[in-house]
Image (cartoon, rainbow, N blue to C red; front, side, top):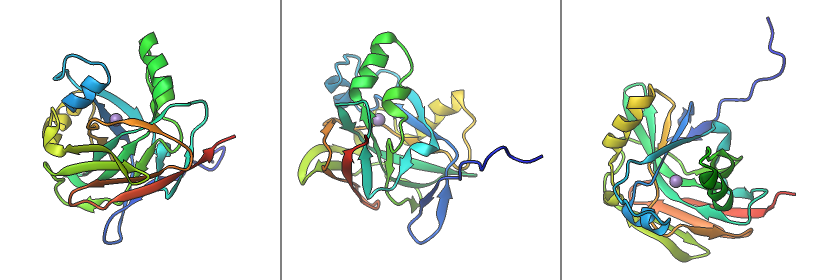
Length: 216
Ligand code: MN
């Protein structure tokens, strides 16, 4: 039997040194840094993290990222991203969980799923992955047009990567090709078309991209 159409290609991320990481699923953790929980209006700063997903089609490497449609409040969230192989975590990188905050807010109010705010095309901007055990401490930063917006440390995570994988593992069978966005420190805020974004985590390849004009 033959396919009715050409299937979507497997999305691959570059790995420092020249190999590629074929992506299966993207798990995202929300509410994993106390100061970010507070800035979003939360009071229980050690609440069990939220779990949501983005499709692999949401991944982009930049350097140009389209300002997405429908929103007028696109937010940046810089995050450590762990990449799983067949024997567990094998690499990590810097990722941006782009969020249509206005649409996420509507979804939250309705008590519904967050996809319209989180799973759009180019909603997951990734830097190059680095092989090895991900850093557990160290600065995590994001700046917009040269101005610091998010400044934190990986040690501020409410639950560390090991604990997050245990939490995810209760609900899902994790495996090779899965990515885990581990949550964002405080300082999230809006981006505008033309903004230049730089993000870095100590010891990992840095990420820079520019937002292009709003899609018609
Ligand atoms: Mn996030």
